[in-house]
Image 1 (cartoon, rainbow, N blue to C red):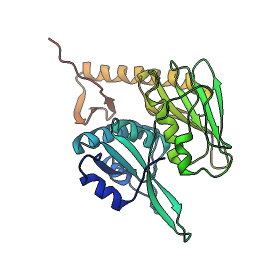
Image 2 (image 1 turned 180 degrees about the vertical axis):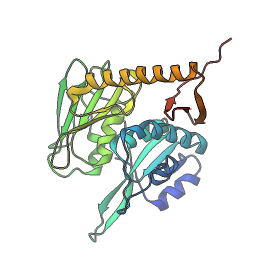
Image 3 (image 1 turned 90 degrees about the vertical axis):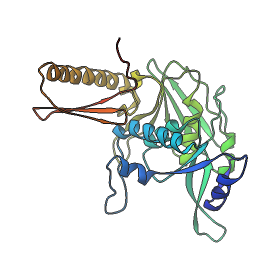
Image 4 (image 1 turned 60 degrees about the vertical axis):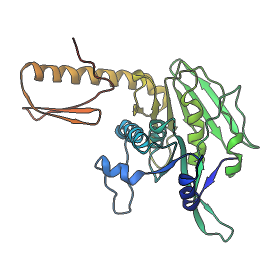
Length: 289
């Protein structure tokens, strides 16, 4: 059964000998770190461009805190949440959720994000169904609930097996801890290149697909498009944009027109005399002989 935590039990876990060290990662703190502010209703709007920043923030957070587990406290897009969880790995991930107590009052709890190994056509609790669509470029995995999902049924969720050479896109309506448990099941599955999230078009807006877990630059973290079928053209546009921007940056450097160079974490911001600026994300730096 999934573990449940309250602030009180979490605090005691952190100091209990032999238990994992669990740290709380505040979404609001992450937002402030990257310069985002909440609106009049207290909401923070995250975009696909924040996924990589989320990954790097959680990676550093877990390393600096020597955390064996992190609780993601706050609301963000599926891409940002999955990037935070992935960045903190191998620290275990926990998400907060709201539920009604015996008196009907809303209470806040915490539960562990599981990592179920995909198997066959997938399984789940009564009424839970899977639908899998394989294409040349990706696999779409959809889930549907037969009613309200119960937290105690989370460990019954086993995602279907997929071709690990292609990214997996997940779609379905359910609690965040369910969606991210499914994503975590594919996160390190046989070298899978990436995991994304698909939200079909509705009265709330157009269709959205976003890569929130990436192991290969071909399927970049934060790559976003509309319908899953647009993944090929989105990747091509992404690669063309990189090539075009690198060409412009190269010309500026060769013409000695660099006004400033700033380094922040794993990102280098280069501003030219013309006022154009380029943010280059670096995964590794090798010094020549």
